[in-house]
Image 1: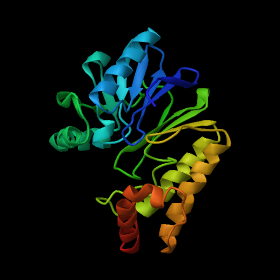
Image 2: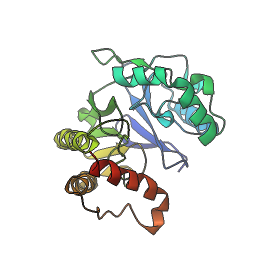
Image 3: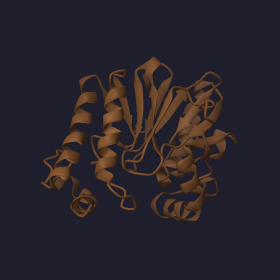
Length: 254
């Protein structure tokens, strides 16, 4: 953890100590785009140091979905546009105070006045390179970013090796939403050999298919009403037992 690592041409990742959260730096035509930078203020500052060493200006930010840990920013990144899908932008504006309160409670030194200041991404994608793939698994307006020319998928809070799929309790039929989202990500996986999840290690090569298979298997078990067999669950991850139970309850009561 702790240093900016290049995972593909013009794509770098820095991992936080907080739930193995990944900040993604992507080189676009006009400069750098920061995707989901985080988490603690000291880590954001060190990310700014890393970005400075690249010698390329930051031209935009992008948030994959409207959860507080994906809505952070630091003054050193600059006063540049910060984008998200229209649905994420709407939810972020509605729940800005809640996001700031959660950031204050869960992280340290976060510039709270900069939390959740995102605007809808232009229809042409603006400065964000690649294809933005929007779905509603995990959160309304959740997006992945496909960088097909570099063989990279920035997956947001999907395809993690440490987090099980986490259903959005505020939406109906999250099992169906996950199935649809994973089907779309299956299509994109044909074009990539690197997947960057929001939390956990970067998947490369055969690991990409394994991540998709693990999420498919977990969601399929929920669909069938049986207990998933998943390596991400167990005594080593007691902290996931609560969200896992919530998933089971929502799936059984859908």
